Length: 120
Image 1 (cartoon, one colour):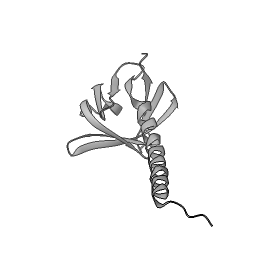
Image 2 (tube, one colour; image 1 turned 180 degrees about the vertical axis):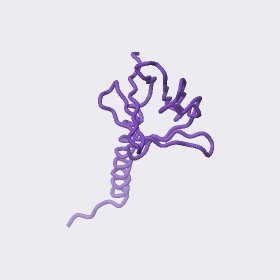
Image 3 (cartoon, one colour; image 1 turned 45 degrees about the vertical axis):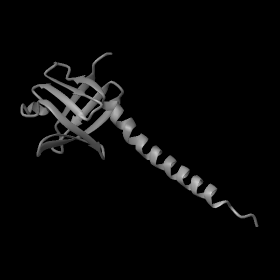
Image 4 (cartoon, one colour; image 1 turned 90 degrees about the vertical axis):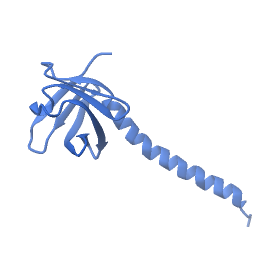
């Protein structure tokens, strides 16, 4: 039986672990990249610009008419939910992408908001 070089085995193990880690993170990055850009309601009452630095600028009436949910906020994405926060306050909404140019935000009470991506 041939003996495996220990250094080679370690390099191979580290390479496999890095591949698994990068593959796992790429799924998160791909999901976040769907958000990046400016989205608005058909009537223009609400506009949300998602930035790559995990901030979002919300103008107009805010999602679901929540005026307090306007300005520049932090956002995070996990488990098919997006959370907007400022300090200790925040709101978490469900999201879906029916197409690459449409984003639907909804709450657990069944209200939803359809946003369309601004053309580049």
